[in-house]
Image 1 (cartoon, helix red, strand yellow):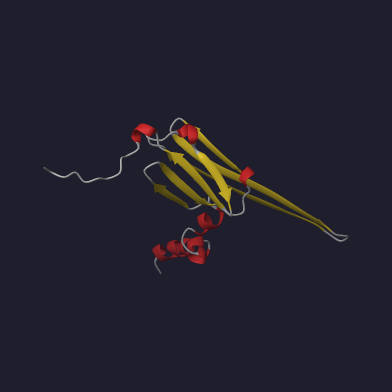
Image 2 (tube, helix red, strand yellow):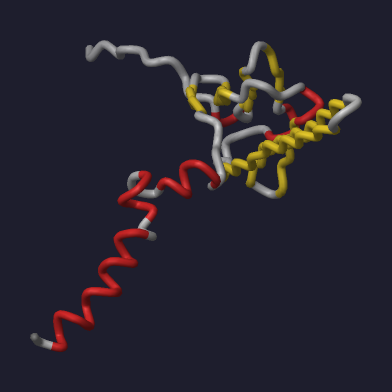
Length: 144
């Protein structure tokens, strides 16, 4: 019997047993315990950029919206503690949920007038453009 096969047997066996990718699927740990970011939709109009974040379960007080230079940062943090006491036991549950998203703003925005509203699990930000950078509507010019 070759030593080469015996040397590979143990690492392969233990590698297969303790390989979370084979047990739970690829990147299982990251999906279950890694950071989660809310989905965001970004729409640009002639006057502004509109950002919508799907962030259910938060309160408007949980959000922080900051502009530092040309970086817009949206973050939220929610902590919850539930205590249940009975004659025979005490149960405590803790919940913590947070996220941070940052976006580099173009020079065309007026960061002083950003507006944020949270309603029904959706955080909406309106980022207006500066007056001088608004594009004129398309028009056709007749050639004479």
